[in-house]
Structure formats: structure tokens, C-alpha cells
Length: 203
Image (tube, rainbow, N blue to C red; front, side):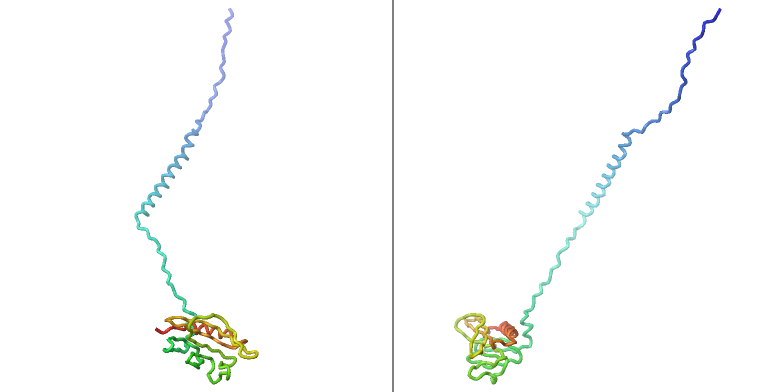
């Protein structure tokens, strides 16, 4: 008798598959977050430490250094150093005038000039051309201040610069003069201002 055929089922061969566990993305993302948190705590702690130290120490506030105020000297006081002093007790005033100038009159008016009285022009009563002079005249009221031109002959003009000083119930007209077209005109103007700056009333 024939034996019945045996049916043998063949299973496919087993293949070993290595399955590697994949790193968790959640775990990797947590690491930078932890580092950031730790860094923040460190920064906050250090800042709090230094703030605590600085608040406990006395604060030194820089005070501005006071600047010494130096008064500027009067320019005229420097230019008049070494000048002659003139004091008139009768009229109650004093002033300074340049060295080399002369007191040519004291009554009724005070006149100081750059030349002696012997060089005055006859008939005019003024210093010659090239000279300068200043007069102090007591008046009742103040007049016009400034330049005044007076003709004393053909092509002969005297320039006067009029100033006024009032005080102690007295008024003085101070008049500086020189001849027109004098090359030293600007120098004489400066001298007049310097003399005027030294004028003082006597109490």
C-alpha cells in the first residue's frame, strides 16, 4: 500500500532585526531649557549679590570744585601807572595825568597840557598845533556830551571832547582838546579817557 504523502509546510527563515532605540526628542529639548534656567538663576544671584554690597557701602558723590572768581583789572588803571596825581581841595576833586604834562592853570579853571604855558598861542590862549590839553570847569548843569568843533581862524579848527562828572552837589565839565588833523588824534582820545577814568570827588 502506498503511504499517503506527507505535507511538510516550510516556514520562511527567521531574520534577526536589530531595533535600536531612538533618542527621545523630548529629552534632548529639555537639556537646553535646563541650561537656560540655570544660567538665569546664576545671573540673578550675582546681580543681587553686587547690588547688596553697593547698597550697604556709603555713596561718594563728587562735588563740583568751586571756581575762583578773578576780577579783571581795569585796563585804564594799568595804563595810568606812574602818572602824576593832581588834587584840588578847593574844587573837591582829584585825577591823574601823564608824566611830561604840566598844570598850566588852576583858576578859574584847571588846565593840564602836554606843553608848558609859555608855548601857548598868543591871542588864542590855547596850546600850539601838535599839543593836547584837558580842562576841568565847574558848571551849573550838564550839557552835550561828545565831540565839538570850534573854528579859531582860517583852516584852524580845535576838536574838543566834552564829558561831565556830577557828585556831591557839584558838576564838572571835563574837556579834552587838540587841533584838527593831528596825526596823534587817536592817542589823545585814549589819554582823555584814561584821565577821565581817574577822576574822583573828594568828600
